Length: 231
Image (cartoon, rainbow, N blue to C red; front, side, top):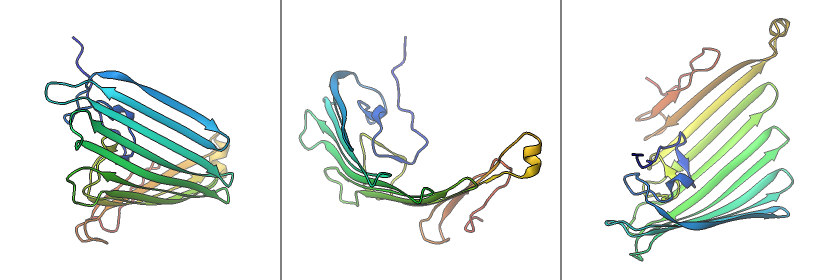
């Protein structure tokens, strides 16, 4: 017999909305769904989307309603701003719910410079710790170089039942840089580009180095770029 599907986490540290979480129990098992409704559309510069699904109840868990609404608007011709609202509500207990409200923005300046960010806050009954999360990123990319720096914070009490959070109570710094070389000797051999990529992710408990955890990526050219906080 076919085994029930179970949740497999994605590679990202945080996804504010992850549709595969709909209908899952706390242990990651899928419960049957009665059905739902999805609506998407666009009017000029504004994009809209809404989804609502209802799960069946089990012996130890009442049915759950999962709803999400998203709006995004194009601005300045090369940027967009948006907002999202998500809710999981138990059909058997009015105090059993999880709600998340968030905003985001993406800007591109001078063709090569990009600025991106989001902020969100969850609401879970009984949670007294911080329930916010935010991320900001700045990047530059042209034909020869890519640079990016990102900073993300996830409070200990942040919870997204319709999203995915790998770990709470963390602050992560991410640095990535890549070069796209086009030397004459490579073009003579029929290759136009040599790609070298480097990245460092730092998760500090005390900044800058004491108590920090850092990881370094290995580039495609064979270089390893360590963080100055690595031992």
